[in-house]
Image (cartoon, rainbow, N blue to C red; front, side, top):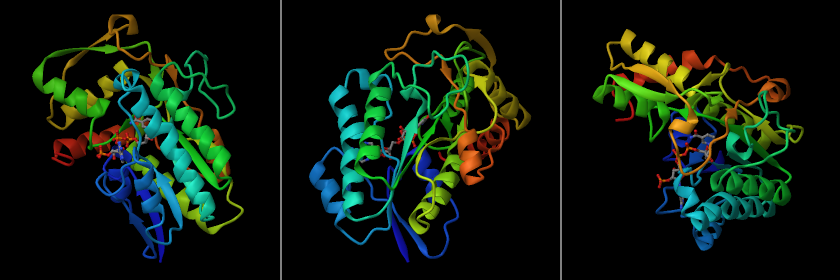
Length: 296
Ligand SMILES: NC(=O)c1ccc[n+]([C@@H]2O[C@H](COP(=O)([O-])OP(=O)(O)OC[C@H]3O[C@@H](n4cnc5c(N)ncnc54)[C@H](OP(=O)(O)O)[C@@H]3O)[C@@H](O)[C@H]2O)c1
């Protein structure tokens, strides 16, 4: 039996990972914050020494992008210091670590989808702290994979898809930003990739390491994504609303978002043979699940 420590098991991707089909000889251990508080170095040390681990899947993070501008120290502790500690501990045990990161490490100023080799340039605390976590992992443990993903949705926790369905139940018209584009990603799809890559990394010394992008196929603006959500919802008898496309300037937020969040995921396709389904198909599945009560 192989044991993998999963942080952030209660988050969107963590919940998706927990419902992913796992081979019989694999156990995912997903301690809650009461058993593993990543703010507390002693808690990390104790967890890493609590059994023989075969790998670490690090999903937990400080993900409140706007709040991070206020709670800078906590965001930094969780997104930069904790991954460094986990990566160091994993390296000392000679086991691999897989870390999930974000499109927010980029400025969003490029006019094409971002490649792994593009210069980073975070515009806020969340992106900067996540980028620092990436660097620490690269430095501390050569047996690592960093999977950058973007615009994650699922039936769990807070996300754009759930927000849109909630708002549509309350009003007829919703203003949605139209001048930010990205690559929407199903938590189920990224969770399946994470599991499969970690299994390879932990069992085959020839597995590629380093940083890779993963998202669903295609791209959209937030307003196009909202339209697609309501199309699916309407077809299933769920709530729907008219979308009014607006500019970012008309929807001020504390943290600046990248205008272009599109990730080029061709490297992970080539290196691992990962297939990416179109985001519209994934949205259909998740809208259906939410309307049938999953996640509530
Ligand atoms: N959501 C996106 O659109 C998106 C996009 C790109 C990358 N990512 C990255 O993907 C990863 C997973 O994101 P997600 O959306 O699944 O996250 P999420 O739903 O916001 O959940 C965050 C997770 O982190 C845990 N956590 C927070 N503070 C903790 C602490 N002090 N100790 C232990 N655990 C703590 C939370 O536990 P509690 O339940 O106790 O709060 C929760 O399990 C993160 O690294 C994130 O940066 C997300």
